[in-house]
Picture 1 (spheres, rainbow, N blue to C red):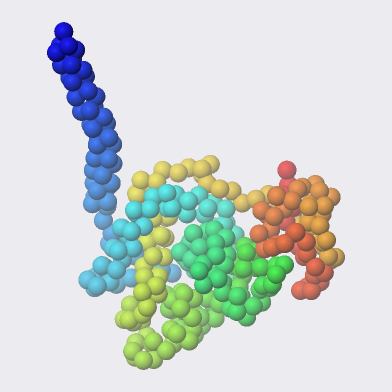
Picture 2 (picture 1 turned 180 degrees about the vertical axis):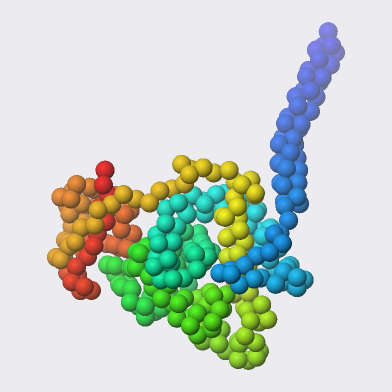
Length: 299
């Protein structure tokens, strides 16, 4: 009797063990097969360009660098989805300002590579959609102090970035080099060009970040322009939308932003989200232009 009981118990435990083992292994195996199949069946596009300037993919070393960014980006599907979604919020602004400045539309992808279209802060204290360092921001007319950080102002930071890039293009006669200088700075790029006696980005030996920079931008551009080709089937309604705001001109100090928001039909949280450039709970008397323009969400 006891022998029969232990035999049945042994068979039951063995069956449970095999079942759990199969359950734990199967999802991992399927996920691995799907990912490998997906990546190995997608090839680098035959042509890539930035602002109409071609990437010389016929050169093996150049093609390999492009493929590095291509496959590394495709391993981050969640991040790519966020790029596409956030573009719905910021690309209309970028496209409008680029058109007004007579600049190529591709410039908008530089912001994606810089910040992922997020008000991020780097380890080097670069901030905002265009990742300005404090000194460069002030050089291009942005306020950066304890109360205000216009690197976090979408319109003002975009205007400053476009001025920088337009000035660079006048100097280099190349949008690719203008973008490279945005990443590593004018002086560093000029020093490398002079030392190596080369005037083409793809002929230069640069630091790792800048040597990858243009490739990252053109791959981001191709994926965002052809999302369905890479398996991203997002509809217009899936994209984040620009906020609906009214601009309120304020010529006085604001001692309490929460009170100010309530008086203008909103609340502290919504006003802070609409104006990420406001750092504190208050604002001093405006100096630049003599007034602030504060976005107040319209319900």
